[in-house]
Image (cartoon, rainbow, N blue to C red; front, side):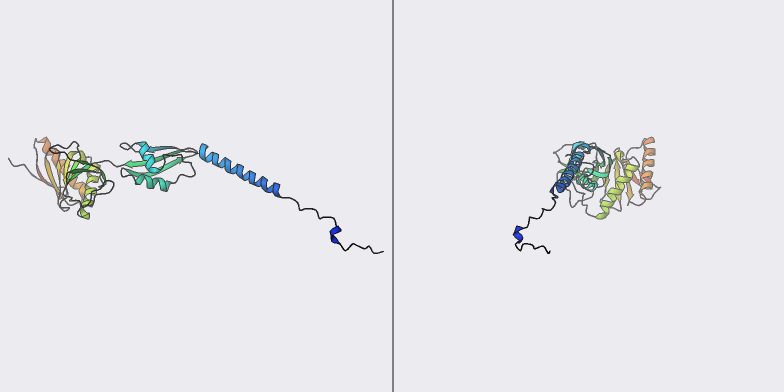
Length: 263
């Protein structure tokens, strides 16, 4: 006998509810939160860097860190060499060389510190420059006061611009190139401390004056090593002979003509 079903579906029993997945989702979220929390803790505590700056003498380590953006907590994974380099180089006394990270918690930044080696006077002000022509400091002159420093006096540049934190803008590009080349060679030969003045008025006819009164014309910047070496050797010989002052024509490498001072 065929079974008859009621036409009113409302009398049917309710369908069972679908299985709940909320508890599983919550579990996954909790695990993710725990993992992220552990990562944050590691990043902010265990991996926080102890920062050192090597190569500073005039500038304090704290000032160098501040320029690099390292005066606040930084971590191993978030520190950026590009940003550190840009920050260091933005300080006119500092040049970024490299940085080294030592896992898990130390960072060493290596810099070169610019040092003042030259002095330019303009409109009652002393400007102190490094060997590349970067203006590091300035100070106003006092009337009838001698120079309190032993910097090389640079003359003849007739600079168009002298601003602290920028390289000097000389009256010609050749003067700027000659400046850098001559300071580099004098430093290499250990003779910069012997020089009291460098004149770049004519880049083709540069001359220097020693601290004991010898003047030497070295011409342009070609073959500077030989020219400076010649001046050094001849001046040393003249000192041995008891000569004082005078003029050396040393624009030809390996040759020097000495003219004693007028009586």
